[in-house]
Image (cartoon, rainbow, N blue to C red; front, side, top):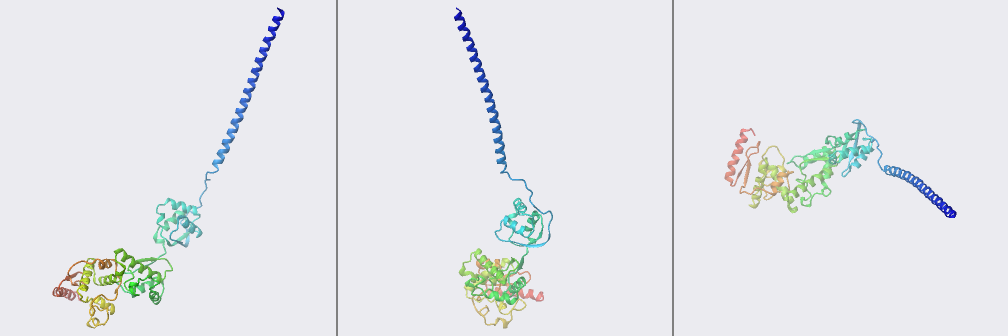
Amino acid sequence: MTDLFEAETVSTTSLDLRRLQRQKRRATRRKWTLVATAVALVVLALGASVAYGFLNSFQPEETTVADFEGSGQGTVQVVIEAGDTGTDIANTLYDAGVVASTQAFIQAWQSNPDSAGITPGYYFMQREMKAVYALQQLLDPNYRDVRRITVREGVRLEYYYQKIADLTEYTYDEVEAAAADTEALGLPAEAGGNLEGWLFPSTYEFNPGVTPQDVLSKMVATTVSKLQSVGVPQDQWQRVLTVASLVEAEAKLDEDRPMIAGVIYNRLEADMPLQFDSTVKYLSPSEGAFTSDEERAIDSPYNTYLYTGLPPGPIMGPGEASIQAAWLPAEHDYMYFVTTNLITGETAYAETYSEHLKNVEILQQWYAENGG
């Protein structure tokens, strides 16, 4: 019995001891789990901080773009080339001291939808301008330094040469010498080396330093462009320009241009001489609307009283309306025309010579009443 109870006592104590050991081990595990979790949280926080700092390093720093405040001072000339981008212009202005930084101008450029409309050329600017003001000035044509020339319809080469001399500050003789090199001017072979009628009358703008050759070449190229736009085949260019120059000389009103062109072609088809005073005036410039017997007797292929057909070439610079009329004349049976009022340009047409003489009487009466 004693041994039995003693064995039971030892067994109970062993169980308690093992229970205590298990509790101690669990407590230890919990402690290290908490430590590990704490360490993990610290590492995670550090990693997030490092990642945030890394990503934030890619964000642009807020900087102040250098820009002047006022409208500038002094004067400087800048050149905007064809094809220049906003950055190109910004660099040009910065190098000239117009703007404080290229960034300021680029920002102004990007915020203004009209920026793409800047015309290449020479501009008068001020130094130390606020970028927005500089952009506004480039968009204002009044600040462009241009050389402008206007030549009206119906004038001869001499008039062109003098206008070009005045524009370029070259002498008349130097302009005439430049005009002699028609190949360099791009004059088509159809013209036979004669510029008359091939310099299109219009308004042109050029940059400073323009030469007579620049102006003449532009005028020739514009004439070619007008002929092409109307649809005239190249082998008809000279003929159409010649007819157009006669229309320009004879017509006062646009409505009469196709009508007069129709008369010209009707006479050419009938092999009748044109009998235009304007062609005689080309040979012998004189005051007044009419020619004398002596002038009409001048022996020249330009004298359409003596020779049938068209003169050898244009007698003056025709405008676009006259070119259009020469290519698309009115279709009618009129063989004659006469301007019956030299002020208003009113013109009468006739199919027969007797009808024409009646219209001539109307002109003579008007002429007498208006004192010539």
